[in-house]
Structures are given as structure tokens and as C-alpha cells.
Image 1 (cartoon, rainbow, N blue to C red):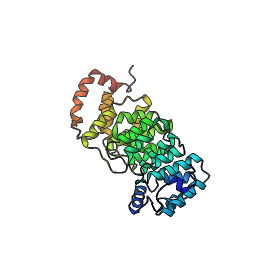
Image 2 (tube, rainbow, N blue to C red; image 1 turned 45 degrees about the horizontal axis):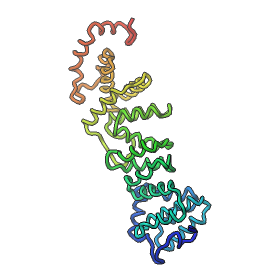
Image 3 (cartoon, one colour; image 1 turned 90 degrees about the vertical axis):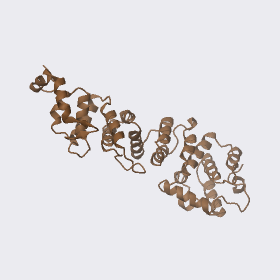
Image 4 (cartoon, one colour; image 1 turned 30 degrees about the vertical axis):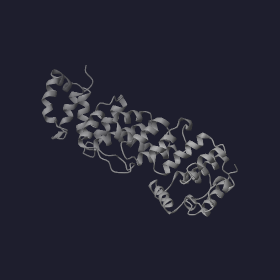
Length: 335
């Protein structure tokens, strides 16, 4: 097959064009939902073929011929030209076999067929179908992996099942700050421990920042950024459950220091219940005398049904003689 010949690449009736008014409107609508840039647009830009908005979707058969001409005349490698034409053939819904016949005719690599199908479904906002292709083991880490994950997180309609499945299958490096931040927000919603252990895998320059974002998320009950596409807020019971998970994290000494410094710094109500959380952590880790010392500055009401003032006598009784001893000695340095 000579892909440079339009009639061989698009063997349809002379007056057939897949881009009727409804199709053009749908593609433009999808582009808007994907922050005004389709993945096909990204490919055209990457291969220096032209300004996507001027070329795609073509409004007529003449426009399709023009786009085809620019693709085959470009300096892109042959397999990239084939991939772009294959993508366009996916739009030809009245000829459902056209794309596969084209792929067979020019001996397209299976890897590029899978990848282009995935991107086409991404551009159609059909993320479940896209995941089937983009997580295929033959792809490794595909081009635009960060952008793919970012859109999967931002457009999620349920419980982040699709973006989590993509990340754990493909394991992209997340080289952009936006993708990393959006994915971390996603993890915070799904699992506090998972978000915590993920933060440990990041470079030292990011670890503390992400850990503090996790604390802020749990205490505020909402995402700490605008990276997610819609406002989400934890119910009070969910927030209480996540607070318990946060308090019980197996923190290393350095992480425990970050935890306390962050809560003390924000204990003036800049972060909701920061003092209460610090107290709960100290009780949970056996730092009872410090908990009593800090209780004077705590909220006097209840947190998730717990009256801290009522707990004081029990803590003092539990400390027994140790309370007197620790008042005489520097905390944490018995002699």
C-alpha cells in the first residue's frame, strides 16, 4: 500500500466524508473537555505537521485530503505517518474495518496500533476503553504518560479506579509537577497509608512537601489544590477515619518531626483540629506527659465524640509516679 495516495489510504466513495456536522461538533466538544488540546493535537505538534486547530477535525473531504497531504509530506518517520492516518480512520464509523485493513495493508506495528487506539479513545473521553489499550504491556511507558494520567485523574467520575489501574499497570515516572500533584491528591482520597508510602518513594526535595499535603488534606477534609476537576469534600465520618489512619502511620523519626512541626506551626486554627491531632498522636505513641502538657492549648470541645478534658484524669492516673518524675526531668531524658 502506498499511503501517500489518498484513495489507497481512504478507499471510500468519492463523496464520503466521516466528518459531518455532528462528528465535528463532538470532536470540538471533546477537545474543550481535554483542556483545549486533544492527544491527536499533541502528536501533530510533536511531529511539526501543523497547527491542529486549523487541520482537525476537517470540515469536508477537501479538508481531509489537505490533512492527509500534510501528514505524508512531513519529515516524520514512516511509522508515525501510518499511525496518524490510522487514527483518522478510527473516525470513519461507517467503515468500521477501514482502520484494520489499512494497518494490515502497510504492515503497521501492533505496538503502534494499540497506542493509537488508546489515544483515540482518550480523545473520545472513553477512559475505560482507553485504559485497555494504554496499559498494554507491549507499550512500556508511552509518550504522554503524564498527560494521560493527569486527564484520567481530573475526569474521574467514580473512585479513581481507572487512574489507579493505569498508574499501577504502567508505573510512569511522573516527570511533571502537575501530574504528580494530581495523582497524589487521588491517593489521598483513596488511602492515607498508600499516599504516605507513595510519598516515601519521591526525591527528598518532594517528600516533606507531599507529607504535609497529606496532613492538610486529612485535617481540612478537602483537596489542598485545584488539581481535581470538581470540588470533593470528606464527610465527617470519613474525615475521622482518615485522621485515625494518619495518626497511626509508622513514621520514621524524621517524619514524626515533620508531623509535629507542621501541626504546631498550624495550631492557631489555620489547619482544622491541628492541636487535637497532635494530642492524639502523642497519646497513641505513648508520649502521655507531653500530651498533658499540650492539652492546655487544645480545643475544649469534642473531636469526633472525644472530650479531651474528660480524658485528663485517666491519662494522669495512667502515668502515676512517672508524671511527677517527668515534671522534674527534661521530657524524654530520664536519668
